[in-house]
Structures are given as C-alpha cells and as structure tokens.
Length: 327
Image (cartoon, rainbow, N blue to C red; front, side, top):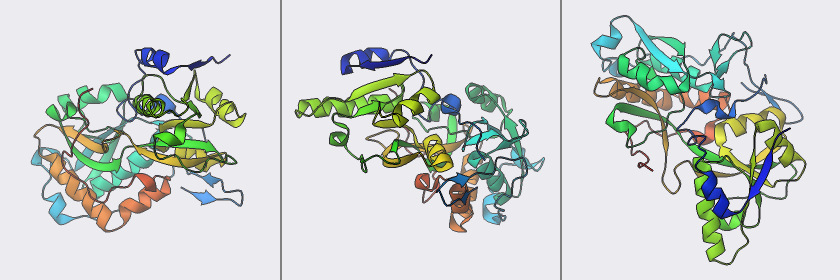
C-alpha cells in the first residue's frame, strides 16, 4: 500500500536529504507516464496522442546556412547521433511496439537533423548515462530534457529549445483557478516530490507566507504517481506541483486535471532545456541555427503543439544561455 506523509516545513527541509533529483535536471523518467494513445480531441476534451511506431512527423526543410556550420567530424557520415531517454511521455517514450522511441524530444531531434541536411540516428539511453556518452563521442547530441546549469557548461555546450516549466495542477472541477505567487498556496494541501527543485521553491514560498502571517502549506508526499493522483481525485490534496510536461500530458489524456499555474523551473530564475553536445566541438552553433530555422518556419511550434507542450516554447534558440547556479 502506498505511504502518505504530511510534514511541517521543518521536517520537509530535513526530508530533502532523500534526493529524487531536480526537476528537468534529472532523469525525466522519474514521472513516467502510462500508456495513452498527436492530438485528436474528443467531445469530452480528452486528447489522444499517437504513441504507435508509425509516426506522421512534421517534416523539416534544410537550412543551408545552418548546415554549413556543422563540424566536418559530424557531417562526414551524414548522420546525427542523438541520445534520448524514452521513459517519460510526452518527452520521449517507447512506442506501442516497446522498442521505437517516440515523443517531443524525438521529433525535435529528427527535425533538427533534417534542417542540417543530416539523418537522425536516435539512440535510447538511460538518462544517467548521457554525460559519459557525450564525453566519449558515442553521442553527438543529447535531447533528453537536460536543463542548462553553470556547472554543466564547464563540460558541455548547449542550444536551447524549451523553457523548463513546473506546473500546478488541480482537479478539473476544482474551484482553484490561479496559482502564480506564494499567497496562492497559503493553506493549500500540495503534493510535491521530496528533494526536488519544486519542493525547494514551495518551501521558500511557504516561509514567505508564514512571515506574512498567512497559513502554512500542507506538504504531501506519496510513493508513486497513482497514489498521488488518487489523493488529488479524492479531495485529500488540493494541488500537485511538478514538471509541467508530464503533468500536461496526463491532463490532456484523461481531462481529470487542469493547469492552474506555471512557474519557471529555476524560480526566481529562468531555466532552459537544451540540446547538449561536447564542449568546444562546434556543434552547438549549428544546432541553434537549425533550431531557429525550425522556429522561424513554424515546424517547431507544430511539433510542440503535437505533444501538448506549446506553453514551453522558446522564441529563439540560444547557444549556452544563462544556466542555473550550483546549488
């Protein structure tokens, strides 16, 4: 049976020692979605996502200027080897054949390769393995929900392609309609992952509220996602707070929850999700140019819309944008 614990802010801070990883800075499979089947809407508001191996992907055109920036070492075999971690829809997940990676990160990788005149070679990999794979040259790029940090920039180069967003979700019938600042969570029962970036943000909001004489947050922790969803549906909790991408997918798939607030993953700082490559190998500039070509011709927005991630779109890809500071 799943365990539920409700803690005060002090005990919550102690619980942070049991780390589950930072949102979007760690394994995206931490909130793996179940099977659901981009994106047709029914009369009930439920969307069905194509998770079959037969993907009708948005096609990209070659940008000659961007293609000219690709380093010779990558261009020579005509392929772009991209690591993805297929464990969390809609970012990347195995298709219904249990072997073909599909999802937003896969579509972006394929379109990016096409924009550079290359063929994407998608390589499924455990999230924890990508740094060594890039460093050894096994992967020429990683598109796996990697957040840019100043520490990572010491070893890798980046080309941003999504904003790192955390989402507050309530049941579809909830009277809660807006969560934007600390007072909006005062007195609320909020489900959050222990040791995560979102917990750290919520702790700071809670401390702010208590200093201002507002009611404290009731932090709730669950062992698995099904228990968390049951607590929300049954009214034992008011909100969940976690990575927006997976929560948005679930909300679109069953229409049982709704988005009531988005927060930057590095609050109060902006956080960027980026294509990752080996330091100083020259590919980041080509990747940013290719991504900007996709943004300008609308391919990028169609891909994000296909997977329900339009809220995380960037206006422009940047090489090595400001990263989150070392904690």
